Length: 367
Image 1 (cartoon, rainbow, N blue to C red):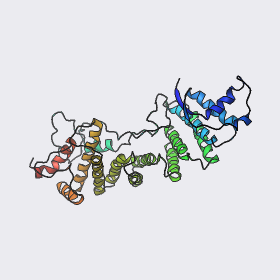
Image 2 (cartoon, one colour):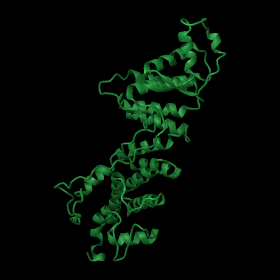
Image 3 (cartoon, rainbow, N blue to C red):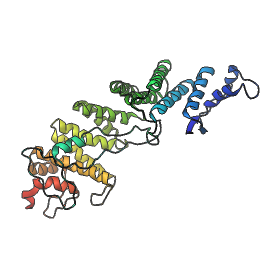
Image 4 (spheres, helix red, strand yellow):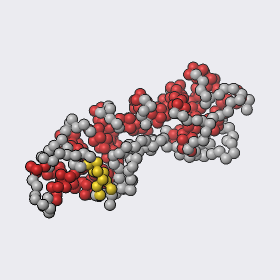
């Protein structure tokens, strides 16, 4: 038996369903006297019982301001039943950072051999493998997944009837109630339903509808990030650039700000705009410093690896711009940083920074 949060608007529907068994029978006219109460309460019901209650409300109650809300809740429950996802508060999962891969035998031809890694360090991966790993589509859940169980996730042979019914109900809601105040939530859930069904193009089209009609939606930055990922994986880097830039323009309040900076850097890098890419990566490291990240302290493994990945792609950018001279010129223009030291007592603040840039500084540091 699942424990669900359902609005009190279910109560009129339940009253109608139970009237024949307990006390005087009510009429539909009586329902006009009931003031809907949206206070959230805990109801010990399964999904089927909850959906049945919403259906009864929609079938038997007169049309009120609560009708579109009931339609949306019913559709949401259909999505939850099929995929095990529901609306809620949650943030994005940070950018995936898999373990470093071993350098394959066919590493980049002409690439200087990397500096020897300290004892116990992970094997180096080739530049090609690094790029493939760090530019893969980010595995982030939707903002409603924070407390969602995936036990009910769709199987390959699952019946798509429920999600398709939900999509039809969402479309009916938007057609009949074009001024519905939660239309962004409707479009968001509809896009997720299409995505879970593998209908990516329809999911994208629905996201486009959301951002056009609801530029102030709470889902706006997440949808823009998903658009960026869609374009990036299809090598539409200019379009991806636009989506990621939109998030950055929202400012640091967005949970996707850090992710967007990282992927925007890669979007520039893929267009051979190395200077622009470096500016975004350094802005990312500056942001880390601004929120209290200490490069000299130990952090969670995934976070350290992500920072190390940022240092490594910075080194690739400098390498493409000409090496040590490019490093000096760049930081002469943008100003020095605490995590970059240019004296003979220089010590790397991240192991990966040391491993990838050491060969660029051999002459300078006389290593």
